[in-house]
Length: 84
Image (tube, rainbow, N blue to C red):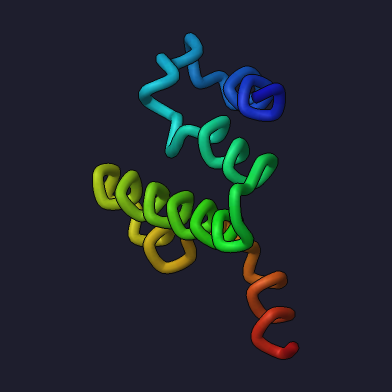
């Protein structure tokens, strides 16, 4: 959140938008599944739900780049993962 607010300030984006305008998914909900998993599958389920929520938001916003890479990995990280 601090980085986001710093970005808004340095880029002179104007007043801070309402949370609904920038929230992609409920981070606290997904993290609760990771923090207190009831089974080994819950971490995988949390990952899948988070990615699905990013894809849904990407469709709403017309962000093809998010659909292409819902994890938000830099090109360097993507290349490293493909080499491994």
